[in-house]
Length: 145
Image (tube, rainbow, N blue to C red):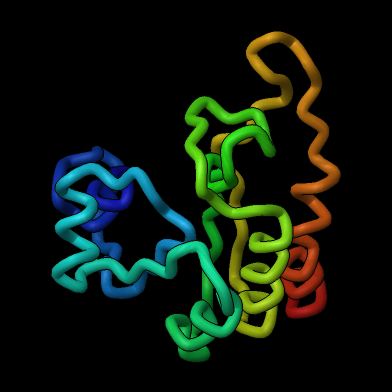
């Protein structure tokens, strides 16, 4: 987990200092045993896919400032071309609900990872549905600066 490097649990050569208590995973699944252990002991908070995602995420964030890192492989398999495809992830509606909740916070940054421009068979992976779902946070960034 890249987060563990940023938290200083292994030497990245890029620095450390991220407090995992400030990290909220949304929709993460297929966690390996060390990742699961961090969630189970409360070092990382996980807001799983399911009903009332936005409400549960708002409660987890608690009004804090947020930096959003979106790994597109959190999406359910088949929705976006990503290196890792896994079922039972976020739908575009779930993603929009989460980003709408986050847009109510002071969003200080947004990055997107694990997005591929095409599927392994060469089909295009158009970004419009993804961009539409995350638009609330993008608008929040534009108006807060």
